[in-house]
Length: 309
Length: 309
Image (cartoon, rainbow over all chains, first blue to last red; front, side, top):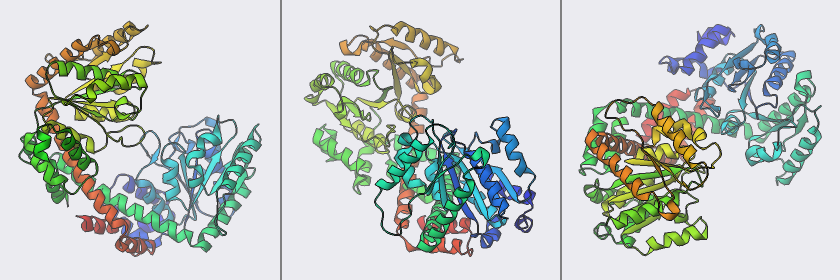
């Protein structure tokens, strides 16, 4: 199956991602076989508030990368994304063009919690697409709660999308937006107020002190529904990737990402052992002793730690 | 110091709670000495949205329990509580009466995160107050995010406070309010709309199917600022505690609580070991191997689990 996935067989890829999502016992063997084929895909995060046009932009990016002959994977974590079936008919029709393209692999991922946090399976799913020969993996997440931060930790390049007329747009988003973005897209650039958003963003990015050689987020105006500005967006992402490689930041980011991934899996393993223990009479006995004042909770916890480790 | 705390020496109690909050190495020894003196305090949670009068009600409850000759502890997790210094002058003056009472111990606890989640130290702090001879420990938390659920898990009896004129009050609160509440207080009962809130609550509590012998939340109207309805509130709490004891629910709740406490401490221990590992070159080496495709992340995580356990 791993071999078939590597040739791009979409059903094999789908099976492997399902193994990841279901936390299958076969996962270990699969990952061990896959890992030596990973590391060549560019991971690009696309995030932003609901309504800014994430899916339309993602779709336009897919078209652009396909035109350049690249194989493309899409992981859509946004529960309202047309990729996941939750959108207007018009959007869904627009996505159809990719559905029959064998060199585009689209997969919706379950979000963790109602704020759309990335599930632990997302980095592993990206790894599967990487091993399956995708040159580019686009990860679309709705930008609320923690998910922008999480996608920024996962992606090589994170595109943060804004659009005019989203209320207090830039202001509201300000909090963490500069930390997580590598490239800004101002979509719906044909709408009133788009130049305002661009100007605000420019002012924001200029306020940050930078050393020579540091990256300054480019701001690209797009009308994704008509494909306008998409080549410029692709170019901005490309420039960022050149910078990543030359500055050594790519290696730093990928190492940090893998460290996080390893820790998340390890913590998951320990949590599972805890869960197994839940049904265990041993924990009940320990609790009983604490209630009777014969054991303090720290000593009891020590026994639990010994039991799970 | 444990002996001095047991006689109610406020400075010794304060020291012990600080040990808990700072996660001091002496904690183990202290808890081991304390635990055999715990289990006699009633833990009462007081929660509700900002502005319903949690602190005023808590203060009135302190007065009532003191009048009955009980020693009272207060743990205020609400960052805007007058107990923690964040309130209007009038409220603070009202609290002063307790400040000089040696049989009232008031302590503000740091909240975890901006939504006011209980810190892991809160159950341990309650344990200290229990061992220090408090008959009643009131735990005041602001009812947003997870904190009502957490206080309900921690307390024997949880009072959920509502008040008229809080926007869509009962409706908004509906989601989890029935699960976490043992007693409803409708404060500001002299304001317009209080009877509405009472009626809505009655309708809500009636909608739930119950077996004979199950607890049905009483609804008590109060004007805490004038002490009205507080005796009825104390009586409702007392009835709940009788029911808890007779139904076996008290033991069930306390066992569940201690189990949760043990697990939280155990998970904290493991997380600390992870944190220690962060500075470790070993994790970097593992990440490097994964990046080079020589090791899969699951195998790497296994090594991490082995290292921390």
